[in-house]
Length: 96
Image (cartoon, rainbow, N blue to C red; front, side, top):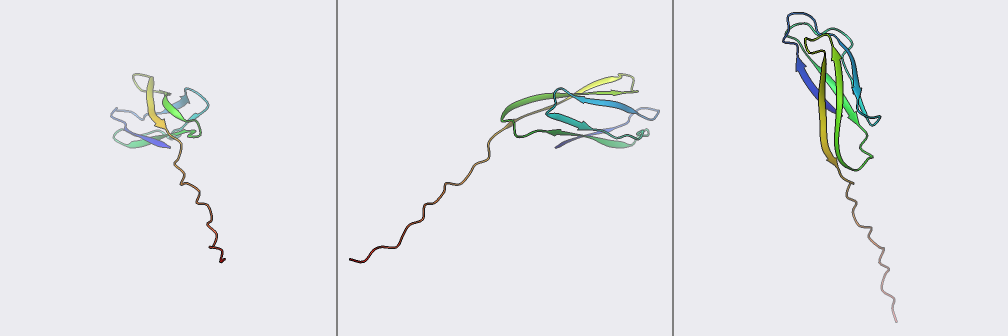
């Protein structure tokens, strides 16, 4: 999960009506209440990290701002977790 913090620099309350990920593996959540002028808030974006490799996903935000549509991006590389080698049990020496 990554967070995009923003501040309403306008003169009226900012209302985010929708935020849509570019695919089903990118899921945004956004504030439901209006953000008053001068106040800050956060849009959270969750990405399915089971999909390995380079990612470059977008989230399209629709609001009542002057520029009603804004696109934010989440970029990165998902790598498989390292696992430690399995140690084989060593038996006790056998007496002759």
